Structures are given as C-alpha cells and as structure tokens.
Length: 299
Image (cartoon, rainbow, N blue to C red; front, side, top):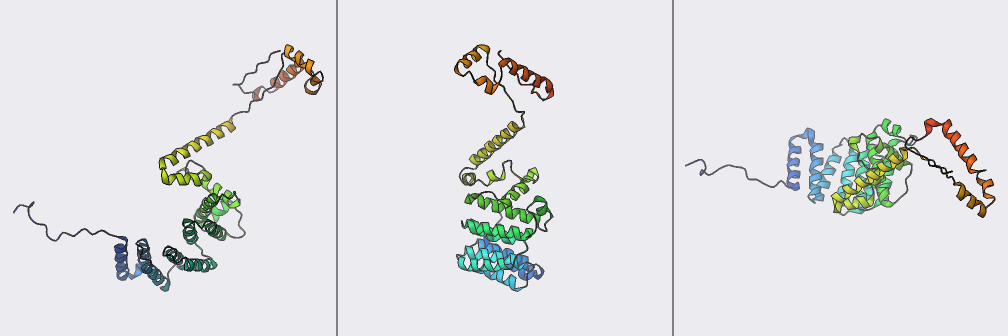
C-alpha cells in the first residue's frame, strides 16, 4: 500500500482550546507544580471568568487567598472584579470598600477596581478610586510635580492612575485641576515612542474616543488634523510680531481736519513729525527689524 493511501493511525484529534478548557489545564498544572500554584491558579481563575464560569473563578481566588498568597490585595481586586461581572454588584462594592480601607500598596490594585467602575459607567466612583490611589501612593505631603512622581516607589503606577483619572474626568466634562495638570506634564515628558502625536486632552476627547469604535480611520484623520492645527499655532507663535503705523497722506489729512480740527492734538502734531519720529526709532534699532517686512509711507 502506498504511503499516500495508508490510513493514519494515532494522530491527535484537534480540539478547540476554549477558555474553560485552558482553565482546567492550568488547574491540573497547579496540582502538579505546587511551587507555582499561586500563579497557575490565578491564571486559571481568569480563564474561568472569561468563560462566564464565575463561581469556579471565585472558588480559585478564595483558594489562593487562603494559602497566604504574596499579594492578597491584588487577588482581592481580581475577586471583586469577578463578583461584579457575575452581577453581584452589592457584594463587589462592599468588598471594594473593605479593600480600600486596607490601603493597597500597588497601583494595579487601585486600577482594577477603578476600571471596573469606569466600564460600568460609574464615572464619579471611578474617578474617586483613581484619585484615592494616586494621592495615596504619592503620599500626603509630596508635591504634585513630575519629579515627585519620578522619585516615588511606584512612579509608573502613579502615572497610570493619574492619566486614567484624566480620561474619566474628560468624560465627565470636569475642568482641569492640579492632578490633571500633573498628568499632562508626565505625559509630555514621556519618550516620543511612548506617546501619541496629539495632546492628552485630544487623546481623551470623548467624541474622538466614540468615533474610534465606529470608524478608526476617521479617528486617525481627526487626530492628524488636530496635530497639524497645534503645529500651526506653535509656528505662528514663534514668528516675529509685525508692528504697523498708520500715516495719512497730506490730502487725506487735510480732509480729516475739516471734520475734526482738534484730532491732531490728541493723536500726533503732524504727519511730518510723526514720520520723522518713526524713522529715528527704526534707525536706532536696525537689528530688531523684520527683514521680510516692508513699510510704505505716503506723505
């Protein structure tokens, strides 16, 4: 029998690896490798949660907590998020308040709860969590400065919290405050490859973010347009200012005097004197003159 016609025996059957199946595999690995049990069970709980099997996820999170895990606050945050996704929002809120009273030391714990509330459109609560996390980790006496965030124990985490806070407050239409300004400063101080070409305000603009879900290309075009406008404004501010002086021709000045004989005494003695004064000023400051400008004086 030729090789092509020979039946293939013993080939593995391809099985779709669903979230639930991956969770079961991770549980099996956790039983086999006890030294990595915390990480494996935490990941398995996440897959169970994605699969909608929230009770299994909650049971695994509780198992990790009962085993004296390294970061119980983080595991509690994952558990609270699962409670919320399971529709047990009252339990989730109660557990979140209890967690907040323990003052978690890592920014990601605050971020998980805040984003959970943000996704559910509880924007005021989300902003409150972002604010509480950022100010707690920065310290009550630390100044709201770029250097203070840089010198903090978890500077990158604080930056994540205050920039996320800025995003939520933009959605709420709230005015810029000191923490928002600090978010702007930290964002502007990022390396070019870690920030967009647009400003943080444009990046968090609710209308642009809404457009992103409908037409990403339209969003990109809007951001590019805003970037060009910002660059044009900056270029305009960097150009030298032009100063102009208005002179009347003798005939027009005579006609002016017929309508207002007292006007020359409140403006200038005469066009001749005014012209002479302007010429002396220009000659005294030749280096300040704009070489591209030209003056036309009709006398």
